[in-house]
Image: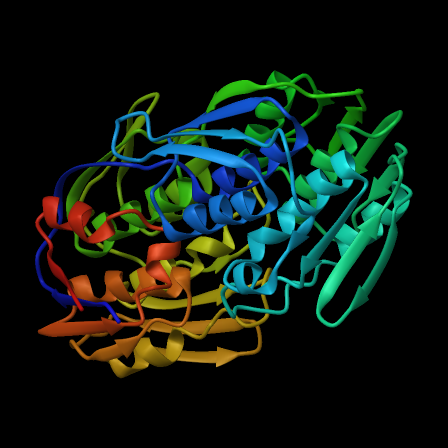
Length: 421
């Protein structure tokens, strides 16, 4: 099992390019099931979750021609002849996003059977909002032996109100509604850039979607969808992670191939904490050393608020800030598992329910630590970059699910980091 070995104490300097967004690529891949024609996706990140979902589509009968070595990072996917509507446990258990095949399979084939999803152990993350939405569209929903079954001859448009904001639920229902008869309105829909990216692809395939990126999305169903070519947006969480890496090491880092507008909440929080961030052009930002890193409270919220996927990285940053910061986690109930590992490195953090109280500035020391989930892995890397001595991060298979060659990108910025089996 691979590990990362990091020696801290060096400010990061240089330029880093952001990969395609994993959280956008996954629903885009699932959307390829909606058509018999070929869909070509570009700017795919070469991470484990992408390969897992491509493998699942191939199990269902789709063909995928991939090229991760070229600058285009392309995959051409053709689901002309599906041979199964069953997403098996062995694949779904490793990645919650596998549930995104439910909507496309139901809309196109009239039925789907998917194992209850797995993924990072950061909370229960039930799919009940997805299933309630499918029922509103006229589907029959049942479950047994760890599988969910949905079926409907043809879905019927409906008005669906989400009791709480759900990104994957919005994506699943939006995909299903593209082939439903009549109009579907999704209210209290997620507004993340990944939702907008999915709508752009679906509209390019012939769907009729309006309002993506707002709380109300309207979908007028069509008879069929066709092929398309689409370039995936940059990964705002990877860009945010490098923003935090530059800030915590008091470095000077230019982050290219990003969308600064998608980083507004992170940039604003860094500015409040005394870290200068400059937008150089439409695709580039720069983080510079500030005179003083000041503790600043943070609350995770759905987009456009501060993303839960950046909470762990921000916590590492606050261990090095002057004062006390209160971090409130509103999205997932079990997303403080990285706290115990930060304590091993010398951090002063107390957890009280959904809040973590971080007292800085505390010197961190290298230690042997375990990564509990994807973003916790990034959190520990940031802590190790400023720790005294050597840190060994074990179980980084979590990291490989969502970050592409992160150790190589950090090496190019001057970090002392290596991967060992």
